[in-house]
Length: 294
Image 1 (cartoon, rainbow, N blue to C red):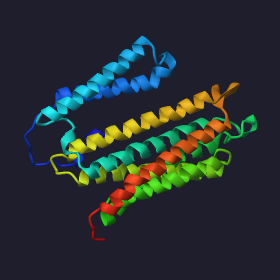
Image 2 (tube, rainbow, N blue to C red):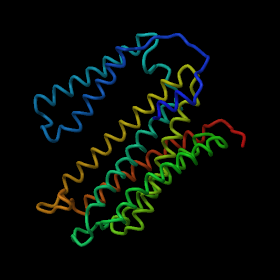
Image 3 (cartoon, rainbow, N blue to C red):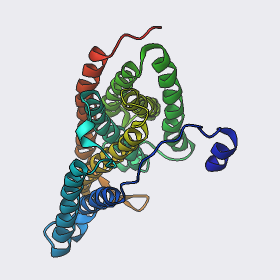
Image 4 (spheres, one colour):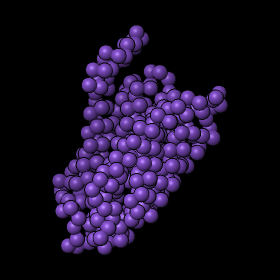
């Protein structure tokens, strides 16, 4: 439906450019990232040092190294690492940290929502319709955050809304230390994390593409997508490992194993710290942005 709407409602650009598709670079980059992320995702189950996992990691690393060498040699690489400028690199750094933080918090919300308070593990949010509200709140927040970030970017540029989204996410994440036992607080935190996610995603694309030429904007937007996905997978996996390492033997909620409250607090703190670190490159981007007329 989305593709059909684009085809019917958006006129095709009359501008035509020449170029070629870097098929080799795309295969090496995609295959390398896929192999490394597969190692990170399933290594704990199949054995980090097993022959198959080591071979997978080696193949992924070799593919990424091959992609980097190819990108330095060809005229039109899929990602021109030679042309990545400081604002783009700072944006990508902020995005990989912030995306990992908010995705991991959305994952945690779905986990603790299944734990009833009367289980006696130090956290839990109940069940029924209240949990449905908890899980729906971030989606509403994402829509609000994205729209507001777009409006603010038109007045002040995309860097301030990016920093604002990261700041909101930082506060909401640390507030979730109390929200793991209080449903109203958890709903508010979930909505605010959603606002942060919407603002960060929209501002990230706007900021990264605004400093590039029109010929490179599509490639840069693709790189932003890769970085967002990479941060989401890596940090969510790290949080999952924290929960796995702190499981309470023989304790289950809804058929799923339950972790200790210490594990939950460590998870939340990790996400909050990453949000705070993401603010550093975002602040640098705000300070160095060109003046924008309001």
